[in-house]
Length: 171
Image (cartoon, rainbow, N blue to C red; front, side):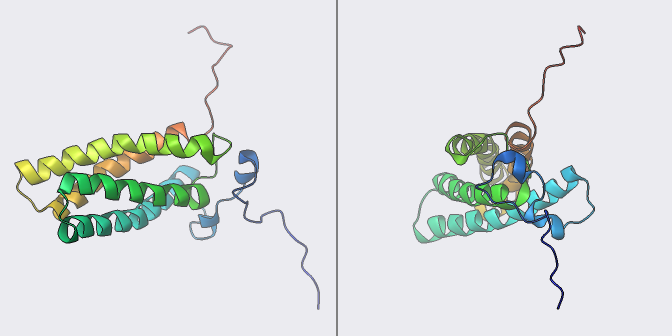
């Protein structure tokens, strides 16, 4: 029986320095031959769907079971969904991490999520109060705006290479 040599394409650990994690993300095997940005968007969409399931389920429990106001429940469920999403993003979605560890990265990730939370709360309020739709239906509509806002902010500020100033140009 012949032994196969170990290859360099092993899945990087979260403990590895950021430069070493750039080589391969675990979802590459499932999303082959896609441009990096498309792969990240698809992976982010899948991770967001799982985080949204946590968010949506908790919202229904907090409003329907605990009797909380839908906006307070939306905030709490969004935050827990955001934590789930952070873990998925770091582990499965993005290859590049601008910050060396989670001590600063997690608070920034959550802070950027506040923008999505504001978008979501505004859309939820508009759906429920102005359009008169059920809070769970409004949640689906609001999630799209929040997802787009959060992906763009997080990709640009946390999970991409830092832009360097072009010192050779005066324009």
